[in-house]
Image (cartoon, helix red, strand yellow):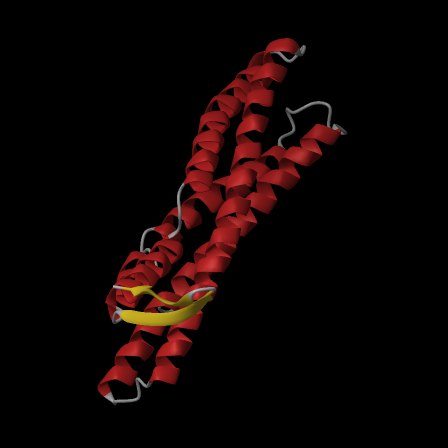
Length: 215
């Protein structure tokens, strides 16, 4: 159990670069939305699509900025905190069978939650990839011209492969929590002592003793 928790703590530790990346990207999205809202050269000013573009940019930018603030303010990851608790219990001699079963339950629950979220994220990303293909088809068949058409092509060319590849990888792979739980259970089964069981079977002409077990 200690090895599994240590690997999870190391693999899932919070990134120091992700908050900065989200900060820069969120600022860019927010600036684009504000610029589109106050750009007097854009016509018509009553366009619904212009309003949608501004809303989309500000919502995405705000979400990224909020994630950046969380990344800067958050402490250790959940896996890091759990491994610290496990080490403390082991040092103080509090790692009883009941306590170990609690860690097993936490790891199992995280594996199940991770599997559910992974499948959800996989199908969402797969849908995003299909939407990217739709953007390319719309740019090719609609009457959009100039920068609007070029931007739609570029967005579709980026979104389609990114969404499809990410979705397929997430659907066909497994998360670190799933992997560690599976390996832990395989190791626990392999490390269990051999067991032999015997059972009698009554036959018309006598008694047959059968045996079976795990070795």
